[in-house]
Image (cartoon, rainbow, N blue to C red):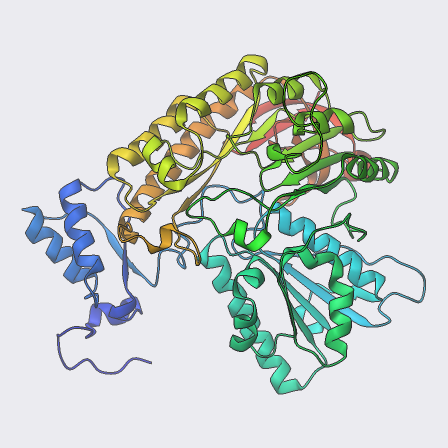
Amino acid sequence: RWQPATTRGRGSRTEEDRRAGCWHRQMKVAVMSERVSGRLMSAARKALVRPPQRGARFAAGQARRQGGGRVSVRVRVAPSPSEAGLFTGTDESMFCGKDGTVYQGETSGPAGAQGSKGKYHIHTFGCQMNMADSERMAGVLESMGYENSTDPDDANVLVYNTCSIRERAEVKVYGALGRQAKRKREEGTDLKVVVAGCVASQEGEQLLRRVPEVDLVMGPHHVNRLDQLLEQVDQGSQVCAIEPIHISEDIATPKRDSDISAWVNVIYGCNECCTYCVVPGTRGKEQSREPEAIRREILSLGEAGYKEVTLLGQNIDAYGRDLPGFATDGSGRRLWTFSDLLRHVHGCPGIERIRFATSHPRYFTKRLIKTCHELPQVCEYFHIPFQSGNDEILRQMKRGYNMARYRGIIHYIRELMPNASVSADIIVGFPGETEDQFQDTMNIVRELGFDRVFTAAYSPRPNTDAAEWDNQVADLIKADRLNRLNRLCLEVAGELSQRHVGSVEEVLVEGPNPKDPGQVMGRTQHNKIAFFDGSLDDMRGQLVKVKVNAATASCLYCEVA
């Protein structure tokens, strides 16, 4: 609620600010120009970070005075770059998107059991690991007698599967919790509110104190114990289950959101110590599943009619480091590596395609690249984050490799598989990053070329080393760098996509084109979305050969070959 501004001192509001709809003390200035000179950027940065902030006009005036001339940059007033969506990256289709995704699976089970205990609703934020966990929780809930609802207000059990890798996803969760907590207080319903995932692990009992209406807080390790934990809630307990545990073979049967493609976890947790990342603290140490258990799951998926599996792990190419034994060939490597696992699960009847994510450059070997090349079911698509193109920034991140190694990986992939698609993750504005170091990242994008890049501005996270450093980069500079990087990534991806035009590709049809009911949609083995005319009833779940007529950065427009 605005009050009349009677002074022009600190924290006062002008008529211009009133129109913008923001408090001075909450203002951030987001640069909309492609490039701002170093001198003007420095001046604007000093104006921006001076507490309390004095608004866009003050920042622009300060920059003009120190810059020695008129400032020809356009600025806008925004609550926060992260809240305003400046830090979202170029493509979130692999993940749950900025608002998360609601589990859509149709309830199936024994007659009379469906809905006997009520309804459940699952809202997932974050990565593919969370998506797979949500399917497992859906399976547990349906075995208890609940049926799915896509309306949170209609649910008896409400599950938020959370992500804490970015602050914005965390804010979204608390917003949703606030609405449901109010409903629970006012209506006095028997609603059970569950917070799962990485925010749950990070916040623990503090979350229960902050939102007392939450009944259960549980980390990713406890997904297959959801039924036991809800029984404790039914007995009147408020439960917090976040302690790391050994994950014995998961007996939960996932209720999968698709009957064509399936997630298969192969390794849980992360042993890395990246200075910006919360994952080791929220998902625990690495725990590889037994190879035979993974193969049995994939065999059962093939028997059920699935055509594609995606093997999941935080660092999937580190698979097997915690399993016993060494190879018998005298090489000194572990008995089971990810290369060995791929060969072990390849050839399962019914499975046409195998994908995997996410890879870490430290463990991505020539042997693994050769294995992918030799196994026809393994898709020629590789997601290998490099985070920064500058070796000093990588050292400060504790990533464990340099760009010479990363270049070698990409060059060897393209030597064996010239048309392979490669995607990456990049963080801009890591503490202490200079413009020259950022330009190293831009140059890597130009040099290596990526079909897809997930970009983000550095976001200080709790319990991470880098969050405590005093050389944080101003949000203004992060926003500018992110804008420039996104434009470059889109340009490069668009150019690379043209290599598919005129070629014949094989597409696994998944569903309709949401913008044209006369067309179907699927993905190529290079993970490109393809649209073409066809009957969904006849083609769904089938591999169809198509000719590519046109291409954009993310999509192919085709006709049946």
